[in-house]
Structure formats: structure tokens, C-alpha cells
Length: 523
Image (cartoon, helix red, strand yellow):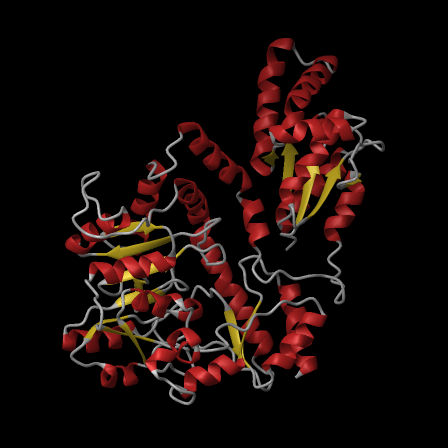
């Protein structure tokens, strides 16, 4: 696949294709191969009037009856839009483009490549003097065909993205721009109609009765605890191997985080350790679905029910995964997730959501989300400013449309990693529990030579990240709890050995082979 490559078609190659002139056969082959290999094809909005005018003029010159020209061009345009998307320039760019150009129309086309920042782009044109304003390459159809066939991976120079948000954005760029523009026009920036639309779609997807979107995954957890009336001196059980938000929100309410250790294979809460941590002050349990798969919610819920304790699922990393056939966020009293940009379903800022089947809790969390209001200017309870921006909701709607497909692609990327890395000594690949599926928010391995391996990968421009290298019980923020090194040996071991490798739906096999080859040589 060539998902990181993009071509922008000039007017002349499209017209040649339509009237079967000059390089029509090569252009047709270029388009076919681009579609087959995942190269994104674009046309510039600024050239469409010219394309329409030139096509009509040439068709008339070729003897097409005048009464048929308009419908024929319309048909050709619709066919073009079936495989090509439209790129635009912004109004504020026009003066700069004009002053930089010797051919303004060419320069406008070239400048649209700015929207594809982070990817390889070329203009496909027969114009040898095409004005690229020195921002992009101009290739003939024949040259462009060779360019997209060039899959050579220079091990020392090709940079792999840790999380490839650029390719995802390019895939849905027109839809994103349309959604943002719609909000700029209707002006409902806070709690606009896109927020309600997103909540309805997420409810159906998860299978939960209520979805309450909010400003971040952290706010989701905080609002859940507030809805359960967690108070000072209450205790809430969670894990020490996770992002700080999970325990941070407990402390913000002056309650006490109580940690239990994790499992060596899944890195999630160990249910065997849970019951001994429960006492008369325990008011909630927050298991975390780390790196993309749910904790053992069946066993955790069973223990919680025995003591009448509500469970809040922290699904910031596992939204979209399943546990025994049920979707994450619909596995306990409350499910919380994050839409941070790097999450499998992420926006372009902070965002989050809460799910529940409990009407009373849903109503209370909606109230908490808007400063404790049910009726404007009346605040019977204390709340927070926890609303999701309408702009972020609109972006999530477009990303959600491709989310199921991206989850499948993530699973395929993980399968390739497993095959490539399984025979390498000193590497433990991820274990997915029976009954679970994973969305692979990260693909995380264990290695006793983690730091040396990370440095070696970096030399070959392969990014990697060691998450949670200091578990929460050893963080200064929680020193007051009195935990010490050795209290949670599995969490400490994972913290010392974990390494997350590049992961996205658009990571190609060639890149994974490069990663695996480097790991084999350096361990």
C-alpha cells in the first residue's frame, strides 16, 4: 500500500483522459494503480471551473452536439469525483499565492498540497513549466506512475510515524472540512446539534442507554465519581499501571486511591488481588482497559456485586473493543472513554464520553457537565464545565464513520507484528485474553533490554515510546499514600520493560518488516 502518497491531477491530464488524447492510456493506468495501491487522488477546487470550460470547448471542437455537451461533461465530472477528492485553498492564502506565482492558476493548484502536510505529494501534469511555487514536485503521468511504483524503503532515511494521524486526516479531509464549515456557518459552538448526533450514534454502537459526551477522558472519570457521590475519606480501588488521570480524579475529590497489582500477560487489573483491597470505606472500583483490551470485567463485576460496590470502567484506551461479546463502556455501571487525538477514536483536541444504563446517573452526569444546572442559572449541586465542543463532536462524527474499518485494520497490523516478532528472544508480544478483542491503542512489547532497544530503533528513525515508566504508587503526587517500591512487583516490572511500537491502521507491512528486522539485529 502507498497510503502516504498523494497525487494532484492537473487540468490537462484530466482533459486528455476524457478526450482520449496524448497520455490518456498512461493516466488511466496511473489512476487504476493509485486506486489499487491506496494512493490518494486529488483535484484542486480552483481548477474545476477551468476544467469545465476547457472540456466543453474541446468536445464542441470534436463535433459533439451542443445540446449534449453539458450532460456529457457533467457525467465526466461525476466520474472524476468517484475516485478523486477535492482540495481547497484558504482565503487568507490567496495574496501570498498570487505574489509568489508566475502562473496564478498553477500556483493555486500547487498550494493545495499544503493541506497534505506530512505526506508525499506530486502534481501530475503535461505542463513542463507548471508553477509549483517551489512547494511540490510536478511529474508527467508516466513519471508519476513510476513514482507510485517506487516502494523502495531506505532503511536509514525513511521515517515511520508512531501514530499516523496524517494519513487518516487525508482520507477524510473533505468531510472534515465540510463538517467544520457547517458549524462555522450555523454558529452553535457550544452543545450544537452535532453533539446530540454523536451521542445518539455512540449509544447505538456501544449498546448503552445513555451517552454523555464531555470535555476530556479525565472529566469523564471525574463526573462519574461525582455522580456516585464519592466524598473525602472514601476509598476507590484502581491500578498503579495507567495514566495518572485514573487516580488523579480520586484525589481531586479528596478520596483515597487504593492500588491493586496487575496481570503479567494483559497488564490489566488482577482480579485475584481485588477482594483483599476492599473494606468498609470502599465506594468504587475503576479497572483500566490498558493498550486496547478490556480488563476481566466479568470477574471484577462479580466481586463488586458481592460487596455492592459500583464499577467504573476506564476505557480510555479500549473503546471499540469487546469482552465476552459486549462492547467496552457497556460492561459496568458506568463506562468512561477519552477522545484524545492519539486514541483509536480521537478528535483534534480533548474530548471524552460517559456511558450508563442508569437513568438517574445519566441525568445527574448531564447536570454535573453544565455546572450542576438542570434549569439555567439554578445550581442545586456543584458541577464542572465539562462540555464537549461542537467542533470536536463534528470531527468525531467523521472519524466514527471509518472507525469500525480502522479497528479491523489495527487488528491486522497487530497480527503481522505477532508473526514478525514471535520468534525473537527477549520479546513478549501482547496477550489478548480469551473472550476479548483489542483495538490496539498501542502495540506494546516487553523486553529486558528495553532502553537499548528503543535507542537502536531511534537510530533507524523508528519511533517507540515507553509508557508509565514510573508506576503511580511511586509518583510524587501519591507519596502521601505511603506505598513503596516492591509493593506492586508486576506493575514495576512492566514499567521497566514495556515498549510501544508504531501502531496505526495505515502502518504498512514493509514498515513493520523494517521494525522487526531492526529488533532482530539489535537484541
